[in-house]
Amino acid sequence: MHRSPNARVALLGGVALMCLWSFFPIYWMIVSSLRPERDLFSTPTLLPASIDTGFKAYRTLLELTDYPLQFLNSLMVAGAVVVITLLVSVVIAYVVTRYRIPGKTIIVGSMLYAYMFPPLLLAIPLLSIFASIGLADSLWSVVAAHCTLTIPLGVWLLWGFFKVMPLDLEEAAMVDGCTRAGAFFRVVLPLSLPGIVTVAIFAFLLSWTDYIFAFVLVSSDSQKTLPVGLASILGTFDARWGELMAGATLIALPLLVLFTFLSRYFIQGLAAGAMKG
Amino acid sequence: MSATCRHALPEFTMKNIRTASDRALLLAFILGVGATLLLILVPVLDAIRLSLHHAESFISPQTWVGLANYQRILSDPIFWHALRVGVFFATMAIAGQVLLGIVFALLLDQPFPGRPFVRGITVLPYLLPTVVVTVIFQWLLDGSLGLFTVWAEQAGLGRPAWFENPYSAMFILIVVSVWTWTPFVTVCFLAALQTVPKSLYEAARVDGAGAWMRFWHITIPMLAPMLTVTVLLRSIWMFNKFDVVWLLTKGGPLSATEHLPVLAYRRAFSQFDVGGGATVATLSFLILTVLIFVYFHYFPLEEKGATT
Image 1 (cartoon, rainbow over the protein chains, first blue to last red):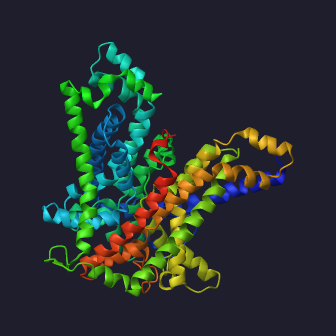
Image 2: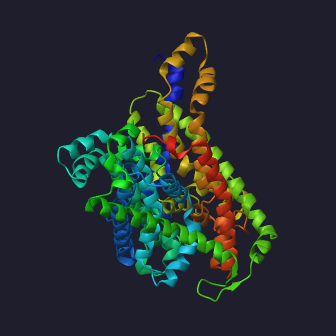
Image 3: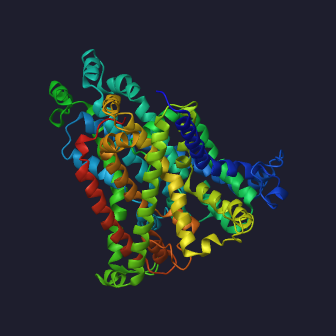
């Protein structure tokens, strides 16, 4: 397509503004976490005057707060959520698409309905339930709560995947002597791997970024996940911005790395409305 | 297609469950569905039950009060104020996200060097946890050292107390929400844009339609269904957004940004009125359910295609 020079300049200018808008706050987070402390208290400059190669903000954060423990908590919660979500949602989506189940629209519909529920509205009553069965203030309560988001999401996404997968392939495998389980593991699972990866990524993302459930359900420092830990640092240390930005960078980093390598699945999932928020 | 396949596989129906693995699979299915629905239904029912009781905390004794909580909440101007605040916040934030999202999608649909990279960058805000986003903006707006505060000072505006003025506090909430959730609209729109046949644009160009005419008469009508889905989904989620408001303003200053979720949280956790909090939550469920039914009405489940 041919463009006039003016249109080209306007397009590139628009693109530059768009990048600035999207990336500047992230840039500022990373740069602020790397500045020496004295620079943070002087008039800010857009480009850092010097970089703190000793990573003092990161060291303070990791040595003086519960951050390493909370990092582990977040990792364990997200890991458990991913495993449970995959197991449960693969079974549900597979059965719904391969068997005649009475009321299956109602089942999938209520899953989707649940997925649209705002976390806070579920978190308040969940707390009273967990309190009554003695699970309050534990990582397991957070795992269970996150599953209320991720299982409906997984069922919804995988339902779309399994539905369009031709049954002939499985039929052929079963005629050739595969059991149903064999057909599932040798045919269905490999073919739907992109969908399964997408579900795993978004289950991880939802769990890793969740603030509301962990905030309502957990109160002791040792059980906090990273987002709640970061928010509580903001409450206690006043204006320790270097450490706060280091903490924010550490939460964001795994996501940025994942995104760099798996952006295809991210975009696919986003376009399918996978991310709640 | 799939219907004919299903007839070809009679053993796939409920009536002919013979093997042990079929039974095990069905058992796992029933357990999975049961556990999931239990985890979701029980809290909802419990919220409704709590809303009919008087309770000061989650562990204190509860007394049945019937609809008294509803009477009290619905005649409380604070509730209506919170509803108005929520509707205003959601409307402005969604309008901003949709407008900016369309502009971004149109830009990203044009050919220019480094496009895949730029597409990646524009998605980043959506991936960040809300806590990270709010901490970054709190730092940018910090009262003495924040970059935006310093810029405002250099521009001769003094040091704005961003979060102490009701208008600027609301404005910040809207801008931060637009920043975070625009990529959702961008990605949805970009995907939809790529399904518009290029021949339509060519035909319009031959007929002498300018860029604006082509946008208005081809792009917008072709994208209308996607626009409706996006606005509905955004409304469902923005209307009950808790974390961004709680982390940035806590509903302040003086409840100027207190919407229904913050009101529900405050009632239940800091005002010793769990029944009242549950009532606000139940009323939010109702509003939300209406929105979700509108969504299902326009986009019935059976028509949901593959995840493309």
